[in-house]
Image 1 (cartoon, rainbow, N blue to C red):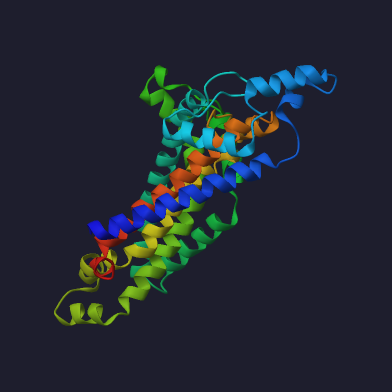
Image 2 (cartoon, rainbow, N blue to C red):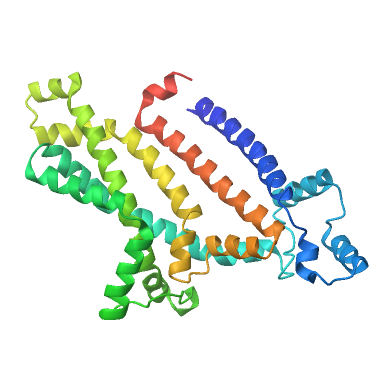
Length: 315
């Protein structure tokens, strides 16, 4: 297990190094100069040059890249060009919105998808299976921002159970903060639950046709007992893959939902930084999100080895 983890850890480090190079140079070659953008088109050349020096934009790209990476390794993400505040503080403030939202949405997605997928697999071809598959097809087809608008219309405008947008803040209490995230989390969770339920059903159906499942039935186990004792664990490999990908998407790809509900998360921060040509913020947030995605994949790989010991024996 240790050797397996070390190999995956080395792969993670290489992936992060390559990702940092790609992120930095792709963003750096984007057209437009941050100093000129901040000062406007009528700014004097010497004023622009002075601001470029202040922001460190007059250094070579290699110097800036090494300084950026070295700062991140020590926890210093630099200073925002626009707000003149540490990028690390801006990310930390927004992370307390995006991370709980992603965890909340993933929890809801899993709680919906697991029972639905297992129920559909256990009743293959029956009305219950058809109903679940029809619902999941609708969930896959409908975009999450449409779910978001419907949820706002029903629960915020008509029933007035929740606010239509904004974030109460953790200083207002855990209940108030989670209430602010409930509708966005549901809007994010429903399409992901539909995908996960379909994967769970397909994985279980594949497992139910295996020889070891027939052997379990021949030894006297009922279909339900064989499903829960042997089928579910062996079907978890593709399910864990989807859960890992979904968490990465929910953390990094919730920008539309954050815009709909006016949530001050990482997605909105990236959007605002791109609009203001605040390159250091864009680079740092994107790199942080890439780190989260790669780290989640690393944890999923370790979960594979725990679920299926055969993977450990192959390393």
